[in-house]
Amino acid sequence: MRSLVYCSVVAGFAAQKAASYCPLPSDATSPLYAMYRDNKMDMAQQMLGLPDAWLRCLGAIDVNAIAGTILASAYSQPTCLAALSFATAWSDTVQTEAKRLDSPTGSSSVALNDWPVVTNTAVQSTCVSVINALIPCLGAAIVPPLVDQVKANPCCPGAVANVTTMLGMPLDTFVLKLLNYTTDIVCATQFPGFNGATNQTCGFSWFQAFTSTQPAGNAAQLVERLLTSLQIPNDQGCAAAQGNPFVTTAGVPIAQLFSKPIVPDACVKPVDNLWRWLRVIPSLATASWNNMRPLDALEDGKCFNVSDITPRGGVCVHLTNGGFDSCPFVTAWSSAVFPGEGTKFAVASPTSTLKTSGIAGLVTFGMVVAAW
Image 1 (cartoon, rainbow, N blue to C red):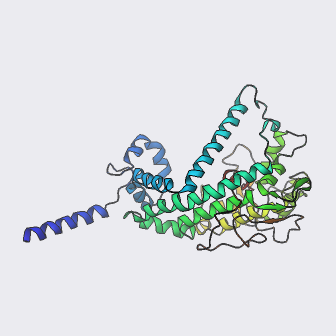
Image 2 (image 1 turned 60 degrees about the vertical axis):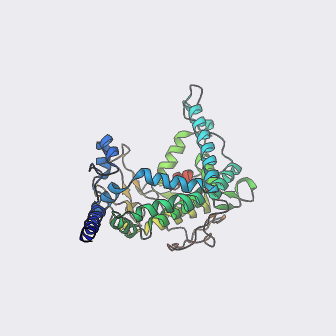
């Protein structure tokens, strides 16, 4: 009996000690050690400056086990199977176009006329697949199991709490909200549309506004538009979105960013919603990099000077936001993912319901447009 009690105590102590030991990725006992060993320099740089709690959580994570759990969850969801089919077809299309443009007979001059035709119907079709398959798959079968696995790891409570504090909400909530806000940038509905159309997606509106150059196919003008759109103060955003004169963060007067009547107009509101939501993320208030604050790219009267990290001098990035509430838009818009938020911005609470059906999507293109 004594020996049985003794063995139980020893076993319990050993289990407690094993559970309390949280290795760094650089430790040989870490499930990530092989990856760290094979990519030592890259991983060492990426982990530089990360909190110890994060490193020990990473070091204790079994990537293969988590991947297996996520795959099993995904394969049990019809939406994930549909999302896989959509993603495969989309990837094939992108690769085909990339090869065409890189070919000797393709766009060696980078002319916009060589770009694939983007129609409102095509954007709508992509949106339907994204919101009816991709986002529900991520929201039900990918993000929750991933976060649950991390939360269940005895080495990760500190990291999970730290991330929640930094974001002001749980990580899974943040990821899903980010997807929804980004989706709205492209698939919110604008009405009326161009050329007498009853309505159109904002993704189509943005694409047309940026690529309608004079003369047609002027790639240099497109590049200049993109760069200028990253240098708009908060009090100049309304004028810029409507194709009116404005002044950049560098004090440079611009006659017009977009050529009337092909302007984004009210479609700037979903972009504004994304930036205003990100602007209140707690960690941004103190975040800095090489004495540069990312929040300067969003706050009134400030900008993010990138002259030290880009060969193009005099660029002070600012993502215009918060200046559209009284903007006299000539079009209207309705949200694709946030019911009741189609006319004004409201910071959605961490527990608010995210829409996972209807027309919305084109997340990738949305993040490009979100550079506005």
